[in-house]
Image (cartoon, rainbow, N blue to C red; front, side, top):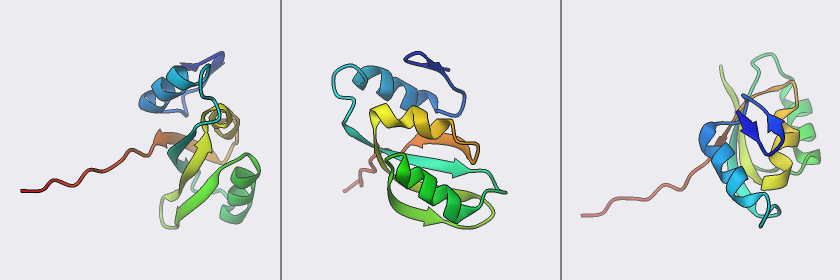
Length: 100
């Protein structure tokens, strides 16, 4: 998958589309993401690195699958995708409740 000039299979197709749509006009716009970490990653090191790269961490799930979610500017997503601890980055979409 190519995002701008960056080819990266860690970025989901949906998030890649969002990046392409916003990189030129609103690259500072915050986008919510879910980041899947490598199971052997040091969670504290990974969290510190992600924060330093611009992620505003909102949730951390520790378990068999390490997940960090938060918001980050569109322009900084590619930097996070280059980290070895990061396995996958997905868009954290809005959930709309259904009412009767």
